[in-house]
Amino acid sequence: MRTRHSRSNSILYLLERTLRQSRGYLQQTFKRSGSPVSVDQWLILQQIKRTPAISLQEVAAATAKDPASVTRMIAQLEKKKLVKRKTNPADRRGQNLFISTNGEKALQKCAVGLAQYQKAVGKGISQDELNLLKKVLDKLYENSGGRL
Image 1 (tube, rainbow, N blue to C red):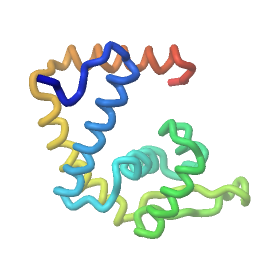
Image 2: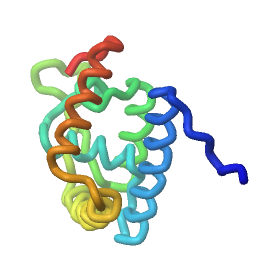
Image 3: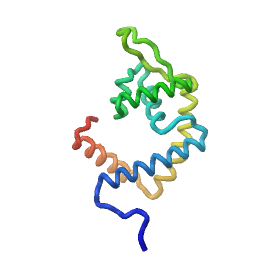
Image 4: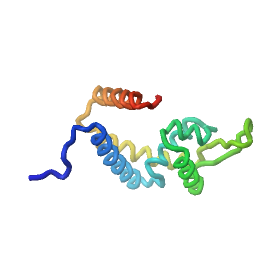
């Protein structure tokens, strides 16, 4: 009997497969919790909440996303009234990003979905195993040229 997905020894394949599956599952939990944002938009909202008055370029660097994608997502979040842009007083050419009250509410809905996701996907995985996984993923990231 053939399995649907053959198990590969390629770390890249395993990472990509896991990322796609996890991202889809998290998106479903966000929908069920009434969240109006995608997983990528949630990552950006989280970063803006953590660092008020952050620039678009700083968001891109902090989320490891290309600036063009971040620009499009910020525009979508702005259209949904989840973020606000204000001119940077130190450099009038730049803009700072802030989370709105609606953005805070969206993040609260995401938190519900995230808790459900973590409970479901974390079954049978100890905290020590999760810590080791994070350490290994950070090392893979650094070894491939990324900066933490």
